[in-house]
Figure (cartoon, protein in one colour):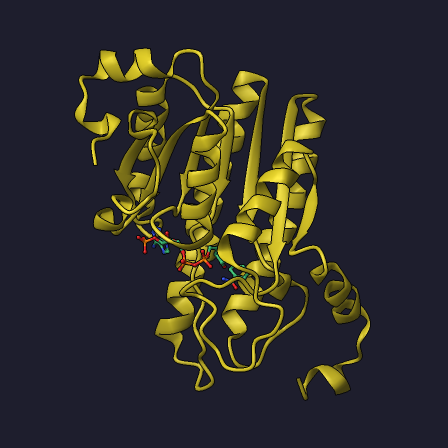
Length: 256
Ligand SMILES: NC(=O)c1ccc[n+]([C@@H]2O[C@H](COP(=O)([O-])OP(=O)(O)OC[C@H]3O[C@@H](n4cnc5c(N)ncnc54)[C@H](OP(=O)(O)O)[C@@H]3O)[C@@H](O)[C@H]2O)c1
């Protein structure tokens, strides 16, 4: 597959001039990859990242001249801002910034290495790139920041404690960023997409229910982006589970 990364910079930039521009952090698989395919079809130029460069080639698109890839490990904090800056430079601007990179692992025995890795990705990496995006949009005066958090962030989880706790952090942090953006009067939208279960490599446990096909989940997220929603449950019926999770007592939660 050809891609814009192989073109001289000036050719690349001229391809993108009139288009809206999006960056998706974590688009080599799953929800991020499906969102990249949808957003390309909607006419955006798209910059995508991930560690597995070989999987970038599997993004299904005819619009190969509208996509650029940069390798990025969100745990490597020293490289994140420069990689985002390079993508913006290549595309000639930024309208939409989506964070889909995230990990979570079962860790009943509380091995700290597992928890530490989840914290480095879902908290440290997430915070660094979300802050970068908000600072960029504040200078520009507009923009749309989207994060894929999770319904898991609503309550604790004994099997994967760091996953739920880091998703709770993301939900709270995004609210803080939304307040921060409003205080400065800028026209910035922040969308917190909270999926239930989506059929990706991440949803690998037993006993899952209402597992959404990844394309359906990505389409609903894109619809929420268009509608500039603050919070959206993916798929929509997970809103009901979110309500229940908030009110069930700990005595029931511990048995789930
Ligand atoms: N699937 C679900 O049921 C579900 C439910 C709720 C929320 N979510 C959230 O949705 C988001 C996307 O997950 P998914 O289901 O689409 O899983 P996925 O297929 O495993 O996708 C995860 C993406 O994150 C990237 N990523 C992970 N660690 C990274 C790192 N250190 N540096 C850079 N990129 C990294 C991966 O790219 P590389 O491996 O190539 O780096 C991949 O592109 C996650 O935040 C997840 O928590 C998923």
